[in-house]
Image 1: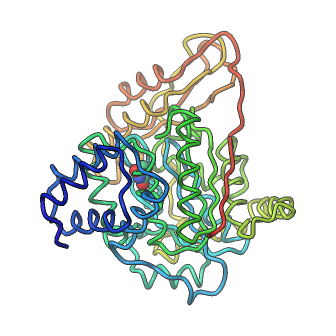
Image 2 (image 1 turned 90 degrees about the vertical axis):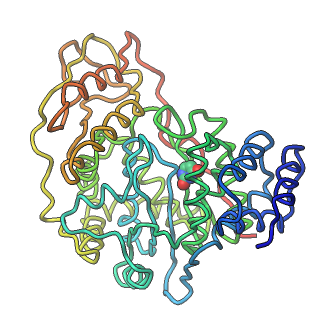
Length: 433
Ligand code: URA
């Protein structure tokens, strides 16, 4: 890559003036930055120009492809069956992957899921899955593919070989407050999925106070961009916008969330988490975009949950990754209970505040112990409460009172019931073009 300082600054200037880049310019920018030929301070100028002026659909598609091509690109053409991947933009208590991946596999598709660790206040699927004793997520590409072919599903860490450009650019965006841009988020999310190689993608865009996208308008704009770019890059892609005003699960904290997910896989009612799981899993099965089969898909999913096939797929996936689900110890007794200060209705739960508190306690706890820190909600948004009734249970070895105080402040109780809303707000879809 031979991009000189002057040529690079000319590209920054172009974007500052609101002009569109060409595909070659985007390729040059990404490959030069990944090859350390542009220093962080300079690349941050381009990111800032993008924040100010945005990226078109074309530019976003080229950026996504350039970032995906910066590392290993997986191919599934040698694996028989329909291969699907799913991704969530992340939120508090988002355990959808832990359940929807084995559930969809139990209904016949192959699920190749590359996942990440927690980011900020949001927990990561990998951290939660690793609470299964012995379970490894650092699979080689060959074992990942073999497992998807043989077991039907695998959840593995997206290693440094997958879309390294995203890792580098994301870290700089984080340090320079340039995360919050639709084009950059789309390229970040989709580059990893394009490199993962699955021809069918389901993306769950979380919307609300406990999520990245706080408003419906932002979530809709992101969903539209993801659908357009995914289709242009040759994928059949469904995007769901799902509500994340409050934490999705009733548990927050790695081992507690895994425990709740296992319960749902064994057929327990899942509340709003269960609703989103079924919608995402149904989209994973709907690779031919055939609405007429929607009822049949729903029935198959219910059977897989109630009849044990979903849990058996989860246990088989864990075993193939050296984990032993039978050895997973349910989290011990809580150390504190947070009681409702008033009569009324739970109107809001600030999942971000609880998620941040748990993340900071985990950072100071020893590895292993950290996974057992958490909160189990006893009430969620819309529930009525009486003064003194338990709002949530606290699990922690130290600092339990601090966590209890944060949880108490995070739950808003009002006299009137809040307006209810659906867990799945919108569905968008595109076919490969
Ligand atoms: N998740 C990602 O992977 N990237 C972003 O930029 C935001 C959310």
